[in-house]
Image (tube, rainbow, N blue to C red; front, top):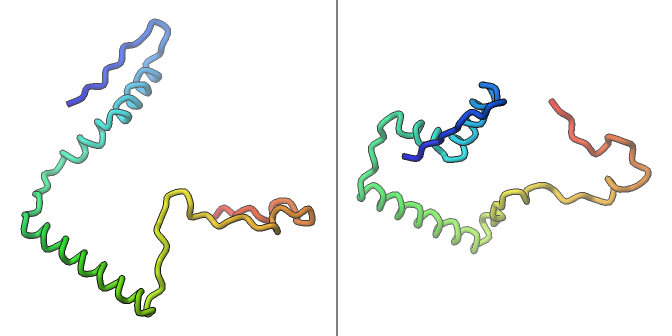
Length: 106
């Protein structure tokens, strides 16, 4: 197990030392591993893993066939950070009012 050790400097107060320790522990994924080990979870058997994999392959194959036949529209692949709509020329025009294109916080 990885240990996160922090030594208090002479002018440092206790709160900043604790804050530094928690950041080191989070950076080393100590908190995540401890929370995962909190409860025992039984690993699935080889048979169950194989059945799940075969079911997934079958589902993918059926979906590809439906796309090929034109019964289902092909979904675009998800890429993190690229799901925002592209900005249009309407937002950048000089006639638009201030705050018109900004989202409303609810």
